[in-house]
Length: 242
Image (cartoon, rainbow, N blue to C red; front, side, top):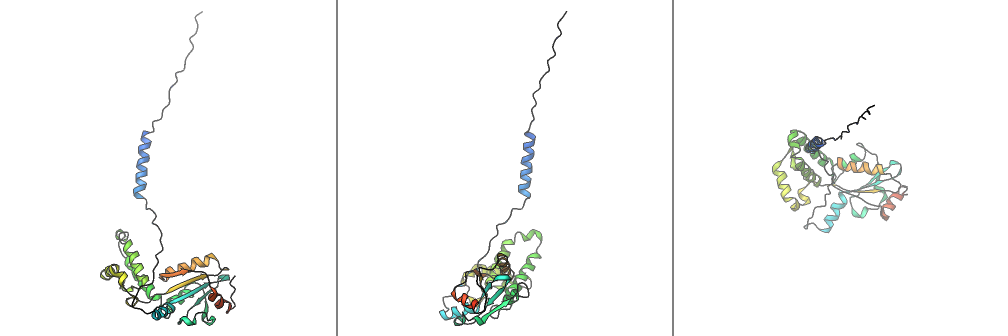
């Protein structure tokens, strides 16, 4: 009897060609690189006091005192502000006032400061925003650096770079070229704010007051600890420090 042949299965090697996939992935990567808007770095601009060698020491102290406001962030969301006209009066508890948060409180205090009202800067920023928002979308990105530079000028007191909701190019270029040569007499007075959170205050209040600095176009502000004179002012009004 003849032997039956055993059937042998033919094994096939399975191979997937990924070459087209690589080409597709490269196309997708290139597409997203070209179409994605990269996040811009966030930076906070600091405005330093103007240098004027012609001012006497007495004038500098007077200007600094008149245009400075100290804010105390206390417990239970309490907010106090301290304004004096003379350097010798600093430390007198009678000048400490309490205010509230928001538009009707601290923002109103900053807007209507008797020696350096922030409303002048806020109005100039509003005009700058109007000019920028009225630009065609295609031009806004190209003028982004111009907007930021003009905003710095406004915070320093150069409010005349905008007029009638338009950027005055000639004035903008002049200030941009000669900004270091300008003195305080060439600009509107600007506030310097000392922010002093107490140990019993909360972080949310600090973030809120920093937002108010941006809303009110305050370019000169510092976060500092309370000193002995601050302690006397607060304790003289029965405010707990810790």
